[in-house]
Length: 221
Length: 171
Image (cartoon, rainbow over all chains, first blue to last red; front, side):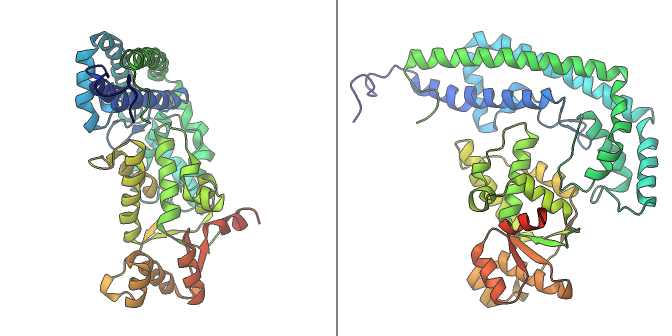
């Protein structure tokens, strides 16, 4: 039985629209930004050699499932004050993407890393170990190692066939992160992380304000 | 080194779901994983066990079942069961499988044992066929499914429950 003040008749106009903002945009976006910061704190940019871009470091709109994006667009129309802070954060993402592309180009264009990986692979197989790339074609194996390097991987999952290879030679490969383009990448990572923290605070305040104003819970009950 | 193993849907899904969350930087809610709830086995222990296996064999049916479970689980956590894209999930799955000691085995549906299909469904029937075809090597099926485990034991098919991986890890 609805109470007098909570009945649909008394609920403020627009509360369904605001619920859509909170449940399908603000909450998932804050969760995604926190997850992104977990990755960034490990300097893991989720770079993928096959696509030449990060998999999970994305513009704010792309962090949401497609079905929620109309609500995201509507939120920015209804709360235009949120737009500059989101755009500011997206600028940091673009800067990180550019810095990452420069690092990738540095690693792949000048034939720096490939011979080292191939030497280590030869050493590895001569010692009687199986090919560590498994389903990754042998000519792409050095790119997989470059991907681990881009993502500052410390330890691979136990069930990965290249875990032992990576553990053994990672110091040789991670030394490439001392190259100048990686300083810019580290700077971009730190800036995006800070920007994400600021955006999480802003979105959190916006959510509290909307919950208060429309008398709706912060999460569905 | 542990012999090869044939992976059933349950342990495979737990491993892939935890990898999916981890790859995104999200915390892994182990209480949502059957390996933890049913057997008190962590996804890390599962990963360690599989890393020690000489090979991991899959039958195609497990991927169909993994897709269904992923839609339910990820749809539930996103508050939507329909129209949800599983693209990011499958990307993580493919990357993981490419880097595992994975082998694929296929059995024609019409060649499977009819009684087993009727009792267990085509995926489990294919797992049993796959285990039988490994002959003297007697590659075991790794499963969460106690019914499948019991049936395998009664038919002298090598099978282990997920809890049994702890014996291998800590022996």
